[in-house]
Image 1 (cartoon, rainbow, N blue to C red):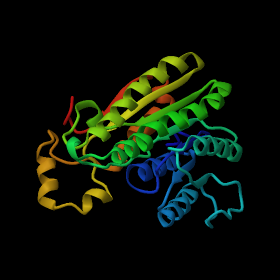
Image 2 (image 1 turned 60 degrees about the horizontal axis):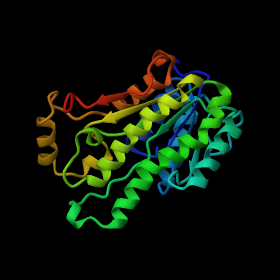
Image 3 (image 1 turned 60 degrees about the vertical axis):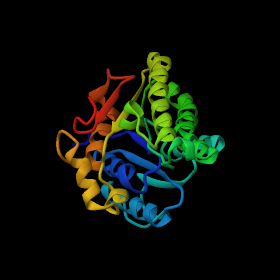
Image 4 (image 1 turned 90 degrees about the vertical axis):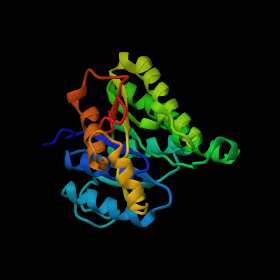
Length: 260
């Protein structure tokens, strides 16, 4: 359909799962796509090849014969300087940055009484601080353009909490407050900021779990199934496109009514 034609998008943590689905959907809709990865080099190489193909660019990691419309970048968005260098690299390569999707995230689950300081800090830094780092770094570019869409991936856990995930819930709740504040600050410059809150999404991570356990989770969802990464990606396409041009500061829940 080309809903994102002419736009440049950056997705953090996109070598697998939801991030990968977002990158592919964006390329299918005509966007130039940059994405980050940290350790999954093979998966990142594979994704870049796939994105180049969607954009009708000759395959060959880093050796396209026409200007590249896709690029994988090894980067740690939780590091302030690295995030700044990341944004500069994308703008230098593609000439603009219209959509930023903060998807990078981890879990380090444990009951609070057993949770280490390291487990707390790591989740807060990668999930929440990375959003601050990239949004701060991209603000100047988007203000010059007088346009931009920032999409922060939060979670249903950030809205309702979850036992054994106090660190993760805090990071994702923080993203919601951060998103609303950014929307208020940058709205006058035609920069929108929204959050997408997935519920139980079936990815590579859930495939290794006991099927009985997973089915129990499905049964507890009003729609009686888990979500697919592509369904989260569709929400991001909407928020990145002009169809959502007057939507900002909102949290779009993609959870099959498990939280309303």
